[in-house]
Image (cartoon, rainbow, N blue to C red; front, side, top):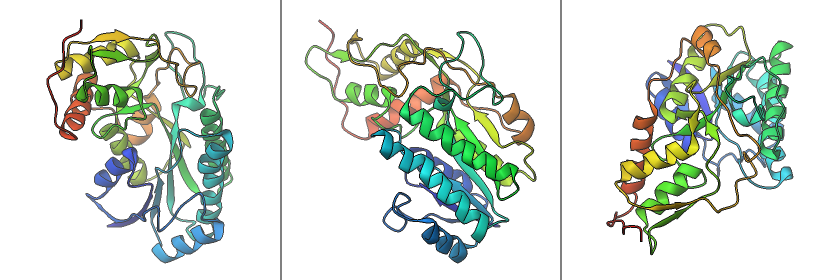
Length: 303
């Protein structure tokens, strides 16, 4: 049994990653109170690694919103500290870091983006993640750490937080408003929605792979879905009749990206991984988890 240190194990992604790794690993999952990565310096991380002596380190921690300084600290600086600490205190451990499709920036409509395509992020979040990935990749190429970054596309599934579009929609559907109007930002974009359980399976594959000839791997569904279609599928799954109004301000994190679809051939060839859950299955789990979180009242019909 391998000893695995999981950072950020209580978040949306981290919760599912922890469950996937519990099957065949001895997990150490410090809480944020025990190890706040934004405050814990390199020396503190070295001490943690020396104490745990992990065979693998998985980091699901990070920030998706905040100021540019907040994002750089939580994503880029933390990644730099972790790489330095692993290189010194756990040089034989496999480091698996979760990155983001936001690192790519805009891609041509109808195309699939591969790991060899340039990273040209257009948001503070994307820049902070791309820099973290590059630092990790450079350290791995120099032989200082055995590391891989999984670029996760748009994760959805059970426990999806209300900070995401579909999470907000699910929350609104379980708390009907007068007139049953569902208000969102523009829904014209296409996204690659990947089930969080498939993401967790990819992490497990990366932890246990005997050797990794590459340092960046896309983790997506390999399909681009209209965001409006995904929202309507969620509404249909909830059994609601609503008036959809797209008059809210789009999020700065992804507003400039109209189309994204992952090329997942590298994940298949290097990790032996492929997504197993389709969009309908993922959407059902989003709604069921949201409905279970509170008493669901009948949705008032649209006027």
